[in-house]
Picture 1: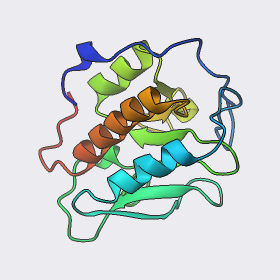
Picture 2 (picture 1 turned 90 degrees about the horizontal axis):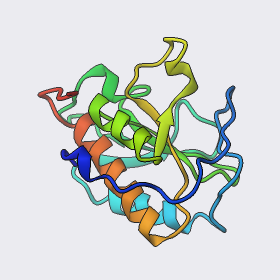
Picture 3 (picture 1 turned 120 degrees about the vertical axis):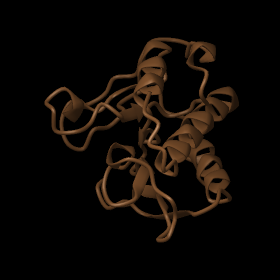
Picture 4 (picture 1 turned 90 degrees about the vertical axis):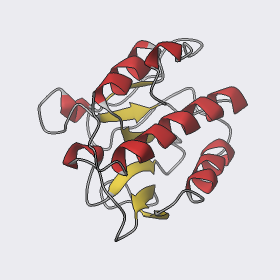
Length: 162
């Protein structure tokens, strides 16, 4: 996903988000985890991707990481270790992911994401965003595109962050 002008605008208002740990989406949740389950299942088919428990999120959060030996992008393409994305647990189906700066800004403008609250304090790079939980199949597909962009950022040794 390199063309940011084509991001469709997310329907409705932004969900309410906590501003402390753990950062969580408080409303506008889907009925169950089926949409994020499908996103993770698709991501596990990509080269060098594995799913494992998150090393930075709450218990039960499922992370996407690059396997040892994979080509890796810049440090700001990861939250911890080689974890570039995770899905929250305990009824919160939102995600944290890293996106190239231009795409993080475009996703925020289009209403799909917002910077992690630690970005505002300088404790996290501006590449770390919260992506809102997908509420239907259309949103699932858009969130999958953002997760794919996070993967491409993480696995790009050229370090594109434009």
